[in-house]
Image 1 (tube, rainbow, N blue to C red):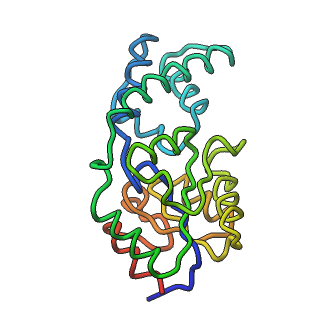
Image 2: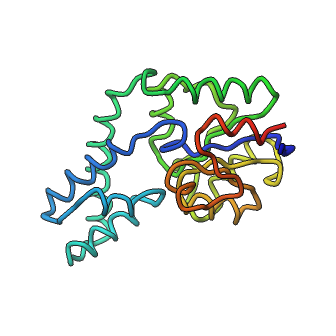
Length: 214
């Protein structure tokens, strides 16, 4: 089965490369600082949502209330901790399967973009050696609404010069699938979203994406 997509928009974290562990360690450090119980199970609730939404979850867990300025300050502290961990990343963190699949898609004439809510997307791409690889990057620096709002994907399609219906989104989060559908796009899924049966095309591995691209 092949579909006539002209562009592919990839979520970054959990799709192109995983920074789950760095995120977990960052939020764990902040939770410890604030005296809030934290676990990997709780961390799973943070997948694909904004920093402020994560702060709201921490408030809930700790039974505390923070002002907007406090939330911003704490989220910034976590982000600085997280970015220090990201500096340890290198091109070795990009799997050969992902790299060869991206190369194969490009060879078939597809336009490729990143659509990530993260404000660190360009920094991560630079660390793994893909800073100049994609035709467009839409990330947390150019959007005002996080997934499941479709803004990040709609802007990615706009930057590619394509209609949303011509683009396939590749996601690992349910909120990302919801964002893709809200923007009028099909979604292929890996990871958590695939495990939950979400998406139009469920991939057992990243390279399976090639089967759906004509």
